[in-house]
Amino acid sequence: MLTLALIILPLLASLLCLLPGKMPLRMMALISSLIIFGVTVYTAVLFTSNAVEGLSFSVWWVKNLGISFAVDMDGISLLLVLMTNFLLPLIILSSFRNEYQNQKAFYSLIFLMQAALIGVFTAMDGFLFYIFWELALIPIYFICLLWGGPQRVRITLKFFLYTLAGSLLMLVGLIFVYLHTPGTHSFAIADLYNASLSDADQNWLFWMFFLAFAVKIPIFPLHTWQPDTYTDAPVQGTMLLSGIMLKMGTYGLLRWLLPVIPVGVDTWKNVAIALSVSGVIYASLMAFVQKDFKRLLAYSSIAHVGLIAAGICSLTILGLQGAVVQMISHGVNVVGLFFIAEIIQRRMKTRQLDELGGIANNAPLFTVLFMMILLGSVALPLTNGFVGEYLLLNGLYQYNVYLAAIAGLTIIFGAVYMLRSYQKIMLGEPHERNHEFTGLHPSEKIVLIAIATVIVLTGIYPKPILDIAGPALENILTHVKPIY
Image (cartoon, rainbow, N blue to C red; front, side, top):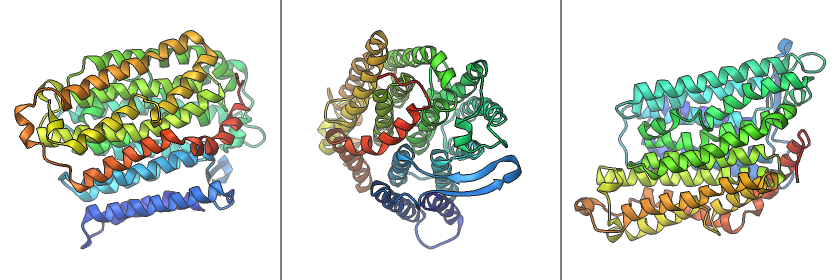
């Protein structure tokens, strides 16, 4: 029932935001998100103490078609729900300095998306997973369309068409697998795992699922919607997209691709890894030439998630462990970096690297926090990024030494373009606009300090994440051919 409660609570918060009331809307949204996070922490405590019987919920939805409303959590789901509900209060708090037209709709859509994201991470029925997958697209579409930049209509339409096309491919694949489940047809995840699929079926089904997840992640060459969308969306929309929503794709690879289509994965994993690693190199090279800091971060995100996808497709336990750790780490880090981009934009009225410089002279605390979050992104030892990337590259090394060497270039490239951007923004000769860079607002301090704290704590002691995810990852590997 707790899993169901974590889906219902954001829905109630979404409705609450639309009701008239005397409490300031921003504060009400923040309090609601903190309550949801508190329930999530309580759920995590129960899970780690093995009191898991209260987490699952299942009732028939359309019994004749074998569709149930079934939600539950294993270690992977719990970690992604915990990440989602940790980031939501920070995303809401980051909006306190912004003025939005129709704030009620803005915050209501954020909570609606939160409910859909939790549904994606906890659904134990294939049809329910698809419903939540599609539902998550609706609020972010309107957030980008209504509060985005001047090119929002064209860019948002492209994003919508890309993701909708991928979703339809997955739906066709799900229905085919459903028709080959044992006994009476069922969308239950256990039945989908045991579907009677021939090798030929699995070969084409792999691409139906992989392409759907690859668009969402995104993986090269299906990434072209991402830089424009991330750049043009309001920063809270970009945080939702980059920090949480793209994890739907990597989660889909783990939960629905590997166990449902193991033969197809084994057949096509070389191609999938090659595409993922190609995206790592391509996105890193594109980041080198960006002048807009927010757009640079968008390409950096493609490089990071390409490495995650490659680690998952390596079918090694270290690769899967690294993928889970890096999903959490990337979510936290990228939200912090995009918020930093907004802080700079808000004060300096520009994100162009050539028009910035010397901010460190006016903002010592911001300088330190920016550096801490940046170092997590470039995988400095004792930060969260190092743990995930080390495990991912180790898993790829076990799979193929040469692919690991090529993928490892992302650490070098990332350090170069991120540190160079930091130098241009924070160091060097002060720009004439620097007198406008005032100290951090209390809400900005809270967001950046919370993110920096998680970066350091996770980097120093990642064991809880690995312990929580371990049994679920081992269970997934029982359905494929593990390579140790």
